[in-house]
Amino acid sequence: MLKRENIKQAIDAISERAPEIGYSLNEMLGMGQIDVPAEGDGLYFLFDKQKVQVNKFLYFNEGTVPIEQGLLIKYGEMTKKQELQNKDHPPNYMQAAMEIQKAGLRLMVTHEIDYALTRLRKRSETLETNTRPTDYGHTGMESIETETGLISFLKKIKKNSLTLEIDPEEKDPSVSYRGVVDDDTPAHFMCFPFCMDSLMQVADMNLEFFHVRFLLNCLARGMEKNLFVCLMDGKILGLVYLTLKERTFYKGLEIKYIATLRGKTGDPAEPAFQVHRGVGAFLVAGVWMLWKTGPGNVNEISLDSEIGARWFYEAVGFESRGLSGYVLKAPKGYLLKAILIMANNCRDLRKSIIEEIGTIIGKQTKLLRKKAKNEKEQSARSVVIASIKECLKSEAHLEFAKVTISMLSKYKKKIPESEELIRFASEQGSGNAKVPP
Image 1 (cartoon, rainbow, N blue to C red):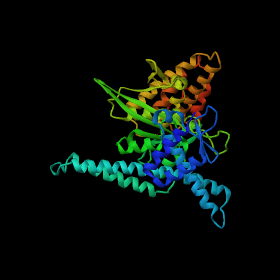
Image 2 (image 1 turned 180 degrees about the vertical axis):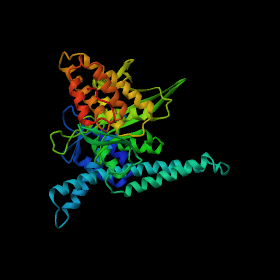
Image 3 (image 1 turned 120 degrees about the vertical axis):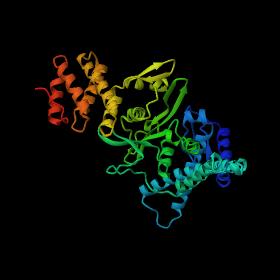
Image 4 (image 1 turned 180 degrees about the horizontal axis):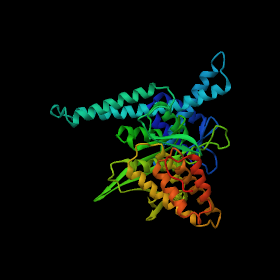
């Protein structure tokens, strides 16, 4: 439960960067317009009698940062509401609600960008002071130019008001892989697209690991290429942050943070709140594809998992290592299906990757020889069949179809669904793969 002292600390932090806003928030705190609940176990505060949720993970790991951002969003909404009320002709109610929400998010993001700019300018001044003229043309001058470029880029973001969109008909170099979420909704796996719209979306999502200041810190530290998103129709559905773990004779790709829209603070009963299925598997599939299409000197994918998420990682092919560590062995379940869809959308995959995926699907097909004994096993069997169908579609790589049809034919008597799947392959015309009579 939050205390007034926590709110005061957050307001003081805002005051150092934006004195006018800090003064107004202090006045509201003194008058009781900003307050903490008298009782209750939830982590939230009250802003003009409205409940403002504070992300528990961020609060315990980042201190007052989530409180600051919540205050700024509500302050921005309040000022926009007052502006609309002062107009002679009030706008449409739904339009006004959207404008108010966006105004709050924009104010918070702009505030965080200004804070990042202040830090970058100080860093740039320090570099200029400590860089001797003889260093120019080498790393010293390059560092100064990098700082200047970042400052210019952040200024452009502040002015940007365009929505985040990817043209599905064009080859966008920022998109790494194309796949689907839900059952057949197209989505893109790509580096985090830094712009005002994307930062506002993250601010609204209120995820456990990813907040606006963290994203801007990644950009300032040159770590922005470690951030990836699942983007669907201009909407961010989830994010993943990767790091490299290096030791003697070892290099591993670690999924440091991963979060999806399920972590958004909001009321799931609201019509606007829609959680899409398969986003977690989609993100891990994108990481697997990055691993396999990369330089080739990375040994494995690993992560640390909370207890509540272990069932998901085990279901898609991760195996435990130590108390909380997991390493990805052979992809299976929804992860394998997501990888197959991404691979089928890549026509320039290396032969070795295609063969490796073919080997995995061959082993998964063999599992169908065993009958399902319970509902859980039947559900897993259905996912394997769905993955097999991805291999038999006309747009699939020929190698996938050949391996799958070969396995289905070999174990035709032991796999009840084999005839149906071979018929599916004939109807789909799976490339030039030969379907046995």
